[in-house]
Length: 115
Image 1 (cartoon, rainbow, N blue to C red):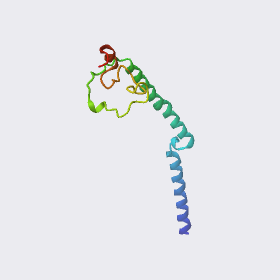
Image 2: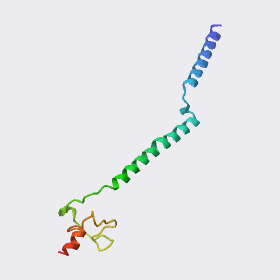
Image 3: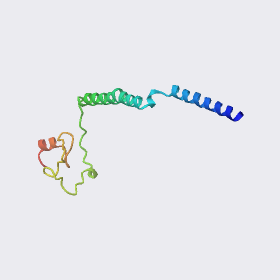
Image 4: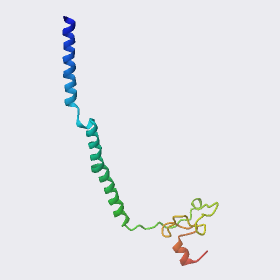
């Protein structure tokens, strides 16, 4: 009799435990709740972060940037072979305002002539 009584007690405790687990489980742990959670995170956190980053980059692009003075550092101008694009001094994505040639900026080269 004691065996069946303790078995019944354990069964009742198991049912109480299962009910408590179901009531404390959040909806985020179900398959439907998990999808809803990630969808909301995507729309409200990720896309908002991308939008703020794009706005900051756009506003930063309107600032006027002064180019630094040309300093002929020899260790930065070592070319063992010419670049494959253009005349050999211009890289593929060369910007004549910000990227200097081995001797000086391109605009100064035009004003002063070749050395």
